[in-house]
Image 1 (tube, rainbow, N blue to C red):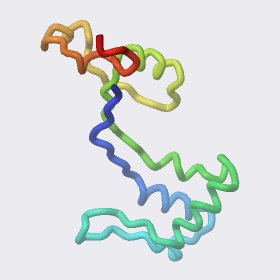
Image 2 (image 1 turned 180 degrees about the vertical axis):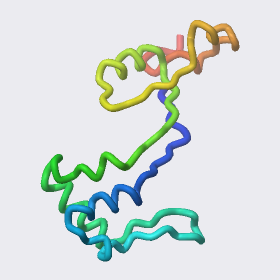
Image 3 (image 1 turned 60 degrees about the horizontal axis):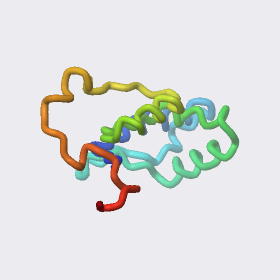
Image 4 (image 1 turned 30 degrees about the horizontal axis):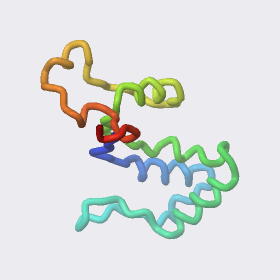
Length: 119
């Protein structure tokens, strides 16, 4: 079983500012920090520009590099071996198996059993 927790997405304000740099169009930005919700809200004009730049290819969509996503993944060991093979632009901060494997008793949730019969 793979479990994803504590997802955070941030860097929107810097991405939008950077996206508008080449056009000198900071005054056209309609995204704002909402004090009531405590979140940065992306406006329709900025979404439209993001869409246009993204459709124009990777050299025009560089603003996406400023948007960061962090999350915690709990997955079986075999999945991590595959993940390490294909990851790009990631940082790994893990718990050491060697030091922590005996910290708790094993139970069924520690193993991938989705393709096994009940017996």
